[in-house]
Length: 186
Image (cartoon, rainbow, N blue to C red; front, side, top):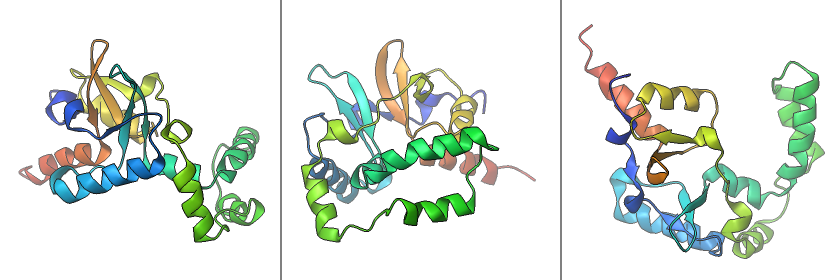
């Protein structure tokens, strides 16, 4: 894996779904649907958020959408962080199950979710990537895989110098590794 570079399997930025901070969540979902029906080989589940000059501001992923649709996760996040800091640093089944009741997660009727989704702007949903979410085109797949296994927010953004050139999705990395393992002579 060390000899295979990220740029060999990344999706070029020009081929990725992009949205602006002022777009609505519905605009994002429609763009994802359009891509799903037109390009089966690269069906996207997330989008890059770009400003007017083409600079990447963030990304909107499935988990970002779910957290935005149920805003009580923000409140819950603080308590989970406190529990993890005071304990062994692991989520327990009890903590996860109790949180649904304690925070009344997902109890709103579907109509309320629809209204909330229609009112949300990308700027309210998007995740601003941190340093660990960027890779260089020349980085190895090993480095990318390690970041994913360690829990870095997906997908990873690929750069050449200071310029964003593409996106590396976890599923594409898995496919490359799967193909390699199936071709092994064992």
